[in-house]
Image (cartoon, rainbow, N blue to C red; front, top):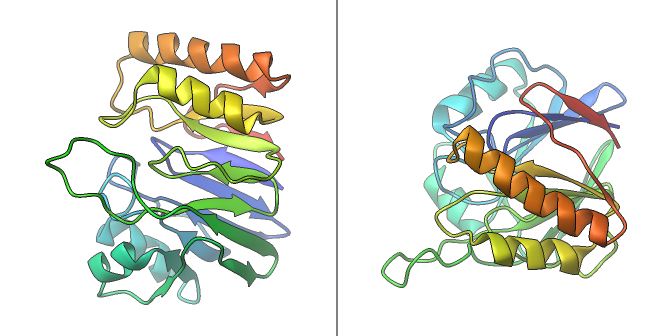
Length: 211
């Protein structure tokens, strides 16, 4: 199984000629050339994690791809067929398995309503919590760790990685940061990953990691 990092929080996981796309949002370059997509997972409704244009591009080439997301995504993407998933749900889409965790987006400010958000565990290996610090309560091989967001404080992100204690991690949700900011926050996440006995990898858009 191979993971390819795209901009921000978009990832593509490939296995046996099939692939899963996670969070194809507005900060990600147009996804116009992906074939073999059997599933699209959207963790929450914010535009940096999905857009109608990105879904249309993917479905034009992969019309049978299934879209999975929480109730808020199903409402926001009403022009598409979204299968609603929630905390505790498990879904099999050959050749992948998905388990979902959590219910809400992390707090940005008390004046901003919380939206639905689910974390996803793919094939009992890759865990990505969307815009939350939801702990899966299971062993995590590979963690997609957020490093920059309006809701993120780096100390909280570090505590989250320490609590998950992944065998390896890599940074996501980075497009809101300058290069200086990315370098600083990546160093913090690397420190706590290695403290927990894991390895840290920086993946630039288009780079891959074998899972």
